[in-house]
Amino acid sequence: MPVLLPPALELSLDLLRCPTCRTRRLDPDGRGSLRCPAGHAFDISRHGYVSLLTGTRATSGDDAAMVQARDRFLSTGKYMPIRQAVARLAADSMPEQGTVADAGCGTGYYLGGVLDQLPGARGLGLDTSVRALRSAARAHERAAAATWDVFRPFPLADDVADVVLDVFAPRNPAEFHRVLRPTGRLIVVRPTGRHLAELRSRVPAMVTIDQAKEQRLHQVLDPFFEAAITEQVEYPTSLSRLEALDLVGMTPSARHLGSTDLNDHGRLPEQVTVSVLATAYQPR
Image (cartoon, rainbow, N blue to C red; front, side, top):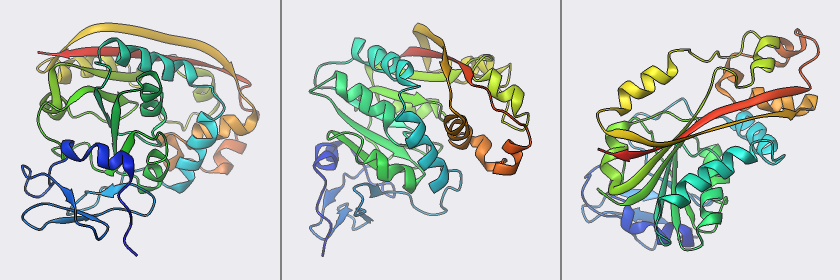
């Protein structure tokens, strides 16, 4: 039985372009796929997202264990201040019925927060992880989801987004610039050197935060964007042992660590510092 077109995906059809043709739009074919006029077809998953990736599959997406850890941790509200900052920056620069594209959306947590603040807006999340997209497709009634590799040219038309979100995710500045309207905003969230410092000191094998990260960010964005406003979100938060394990398990560090690595370091911290920068950039 064909998969029905999810309402959120129907809302976003005008944004999409065939990943193969690059210019032709996609429309439902009535058989559970989106199809362009040239006949290229892309299946709609029964979980609600559309599979747009073609050719060699990306391998860096979160696996099932990472997604479960992220879902559990984010449901605690420990990162709610970050979500609120992202939603605030987006709402300040978006029309009431605007469009949000979330590059590397994960489970859709931050995209859902933006759409909660903007009752007339719609959103589209892109990610390589089909496990994460199962959650992203359910994150909000106006949030569509599609598999895509952020490093490739986006399957989106030019000048269609009022806001592009990039929260703890890889960046593709040229594509961000192409899909944003001239009046749009790119919102980038990244950790400072103090982020989760207490946890990283107890678990040395965790991925470190490069001290040159800000300089590199400026270098890659500067040809396309200039910073309009930056907010620092920093606060202490308590952690149970399970929350600490999930916090490690939802990050790229999970690919390098096992439960024995964590147990070897004894008691995990009961409190950590959350410290990120959230910047809204305007296109040059």
